[in-house]
Image (tube, rainbow, N blue to C red; front, side, top):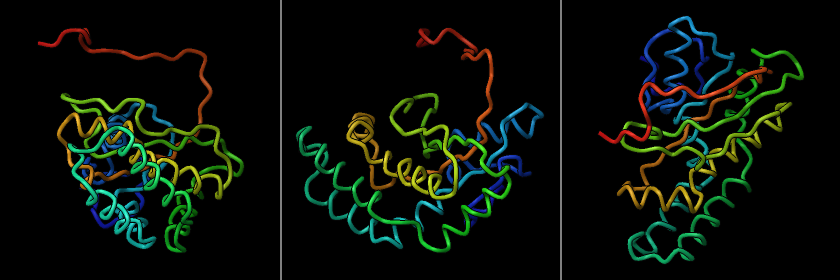
Length: 206
């Protein structure tokens, strides 16, 4: 099992990937890669990196303050929108710490210089059998260079706190204070065809 204390894990790394540490998307891609399927190379910034950022930047305290103003159940949509906006602004105003920048730089050394990358969300608890967060969190494509990757990572982290994501968690009865976000950074691969395959009819609710 991947250590919960690791900030970065190569996508093709051995061992079982804990979805509580890398999020559901990264865990499934790692499973496919380890099974021999062709998965674009990359790495995962674990939820530990997210926690390090929000703690070092003082964002954890700001989130606690924002969520403590009023129960989500008592908030109007406009209040949720304002809360989400203030939280996301904190993510975008703070640069990554020196240690996190070094961690990202180490991951980027696995790519060719100037490679076009995709930076996408891998939130804990998303896209399970009983819930789908498709489209609620950011995925940014065509990212080049370390600074652009760092900016994209912060945008993905911030998307955990969009008003739409907060409203969906409210609908599901999930506590947003427990939300965590891992981030996938992968090489962009040009392809002629693409598609989605379902193992059963998605309209079948049985």
